[in-house]
Amino acid sequence: MRQGAKGWASAIIALLFFSSLLAACGGNGGGGSGSADSGNAPSGQDNTGSSKPVEVTMITWESAAMNEKIMASMKKFEEENPDIKVKLIPTPLDNYGVKINGMITAKKAPDIFMTGNDMLLDNAGKGLLYDWTELATQDKAFMEGFYEGVVDSWYYEGKLVGLPGLLNTYGIFYNKKSFQEAGLPEPKIGWTYDEFFTAMEKLSSNQGGVQQFGYYAPLDPFHVSLYSVSAGGAPFADAIINPTKVEISDPFREGVEKYKSAIANGYMNPPTFDLTNAMSSFKQGKVPMTLQGQWVADDLIRTAPKELEWGYAPMPVVNSQTEIYDAVGWSSPATLKNPEAVWKVLKYLDSKMYEEVLPSTPVAPAAYQASSAAYYDALKAAGHPEVGEGLDHILKSPNTQPVRFLSTWAGKAYPFIEASWKNILMGKAPLTELDVMAEKINNVITTGK
Image 1 (cartoon, one colour):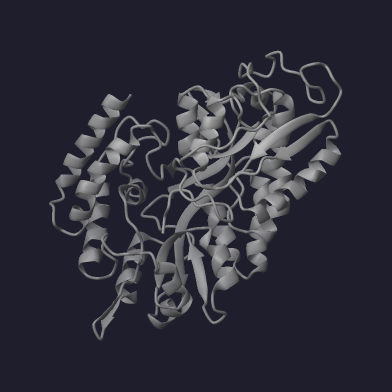
Image 2 (spheres, helix red, strand yellow; image 1 turned 45 degrees about the vertical axis):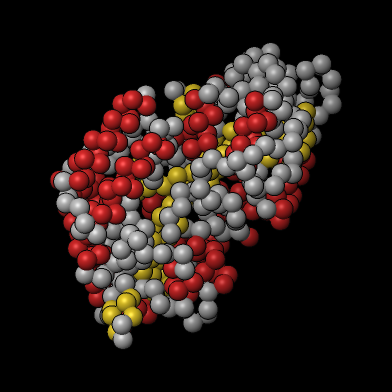
């Protein structure tokens, strides 16, 4: 099931805010101005002019085993850069976000910390993050190595306040045997919504009072927006960062009608259906088709029964491709010292570190395109090249939409979706309720600016 941003290995679970406070650690004092020439010492020196190595501190939300792999890679970085030492600050995963924010407020934050888009933009809006724009501008070759467009949501008001590290995409995992028995072609890149809804119908059944849906998925306006834009309509939200409005276009209504019909006919689960066990049922061969994040592939490769034959495909299209994905990555506090040294570490994390670590933990493609090759190769070696091919196709999409609201007013907007959306899909409210929902959300956007 889609959960915002699921974690690399274990922890990119929601890209929302976490809670509580972590004990202070070193790595930063005050005084960084957010530009590379702010009087900070160059790499290889501290601010007293000493020639001792610069210490760059970092915190991740990864497991101990994953952190061990990361730091093993960083030892190679230290060999290549003897003037820099990288220190990992251990921290429990619970309440990660508020712990980091507390450290930033106390000017005790690490030089580098893992973050998601939501947390990134919230901290940037408070002026708490370092501005990497100058160093990034000077390092054009490196910045051009990211998948096109993925860095865009890491800017806030024209300032680059972090770098994406890993990407979360969403697509269809399917049971090959179910498609074969139904006489259906397997989904592939470029398959259509007509084929998608036909497959839902033919894969569903109700035998002996046991309902099997053809498609198991959570459904929200952002996923219906994929249908709308692919059909030439407006997106539900008009921007990934700071949208100015939501819109219910005619193609959006058409998409809602198609999903509504599928739900009414038992081809797809209703929005009230508990999807908690969807993946365990998929492993048992009881779920023909399900929407999941790409991280599910790693679990299936490791734990699915050998007799389960499964495949993966991106979301279908009406006319043109459009996709949703989001990222987790790295930020630094505005009080950062030694930005040149930290920039070197960030570059290594996003490139060589992921190249080395992803083959043993193939759960997400890297935002830095060349580093994703190792991830795709690992999937291919595991017998599922279609996953890597599908993800690469998604990440090269000419059109990208938000996976959710990222703005600070999001918490005020979602109750209006919750109040209307399920009733509309289940036929308990007329389609005109979409316009009422949109009007209320637009009022939130207007007053939230």
